[in-house]
Amino acid sequence: MARRERITIAVLGLGGQGGGVLADWIVQLGEANNYVAQGTSVPGVAQRTGATVYYIEMFPAGCASAPPVLALMPVPGDVDVVLASELMEAGRAILRGFVSKDTLLIGSTHRVYAIDEKSAMGDGRASGERILAAAQERARRFIGFDMDDAAARTGSVISSIMFGALAGSGILPFPRAAFEDAIRAGGKAIETNLQGFAAGFDAAQGKGGTPQETPRATAPTTAAGRALLARIEANLPREAHDFAVEGVKRLMDYQDAAYAALYLDRLEALGTDPALLTEAARHLALWMSYEDTIRVAALKVRASRFARVRAEVKAKDDQIVELTEYMHPRLEEVCETLPTPIGRRILASPGLTRRLKPLFAKGRHVETTSLRWFLMLSLLAGWRRWRRGTLRYRIEQARIEAWLALARAAEPDVAVEIVKCQRLIKGYGDTFERGLGNYERIVERYRKGGLAAADIARLREAALADEEGQALDQALAS
Image (cartoon, rainbow, N blue to C red; front, side, top):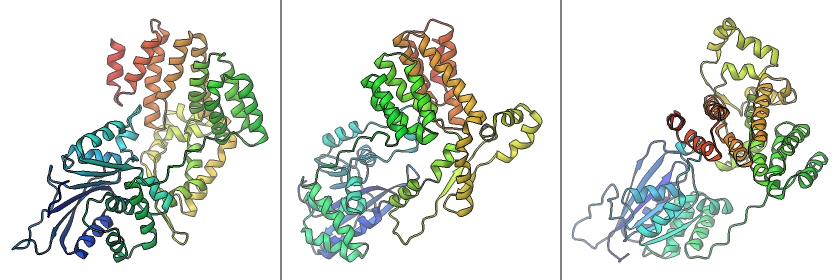
């Protein structure tokens, strides 16, 4: 960037990431170094946690005959520095024209997924590679690294990492000490923010440490787990081992060792084809750990979950965190948690269904950190020992056996595609019913004959294309 008197900086951040604090630091930095500085912000709607644009303009004091008039918002093509706290925010800055060949773009390469990405039937994630390529192409210079990881390693927040990267870039005419003085003047978590600042400064100058490689998952450690691991190594092809080990661990956690042994029984009955068993090891574990009300309750009250939430909000040991969730179990899901005869009796009775359904017509906010709700959910989670007697267990095991029977009877390439159709069945409530309905439509079409492996794959991708099922309708019609 050719040096000019006016300096324009745009900060794009998500709610809770300290974007306002970062903007204040930059304004304080300019004012402390004899610049006229102004910061503004425009809050966004709930795109993920609410995206906001902060804009700072600085002008050297005394360089003009009259006080400068500073803008309130960034102008496309006229921004010297763009700071983005997340990869999609960097992409948003590029799309809005804030990034040009005169712009230094500093952005985090980690992702915070948007609601439409998370709720997509298939893989709805936007392409991070395209944004990284655009950042290299559109900006004069791009400084990108995982700021979320750097914040976690230093115990700081992304705002201090971005401020350090801004200093390390050398784009502003201020020494490092001036940036650090701005943090001290802010008076908020000074030592922690200085540690984050240092990490961002080093990363911008290519001195950051190499991120730690994610360790591979460990094998089961109990006696029962080791016995199941021995079965995997003896009876399944090597290509399927990783998924099978994870499947055993998941199902032991979900139910017990006997349920994990049933999982291996089902895998071994599929034959010896490595491609089929690799896919089946993954998808069978997912279907066998279907999300009933017992599973949801168990996940909500886990100590590890509360610890993760406290870490995400950076709560101190002496701070109390209250966690409120939205839960909406329908009558069908409640009945499916009951013993099979009782659940079937209620669902088969129009009178009982009509009287009970209004009780579950609305969702409710549940404070899982309160004693009342924690105990209620813990009791429900403890119902796991009786899960095999529930109506939902009977229904799902029958569906799984029918699915596996189709795969066993099919040609190898067709069997692989049938197994992959489990991708359609996920979640609970309306999401589960929608996916199951799409799966059953494909299976029904397959039973009628005439579908090759490529046809099943095409129908599956069509079912994942939209929630309304229009793409699948068109694919089945064609």
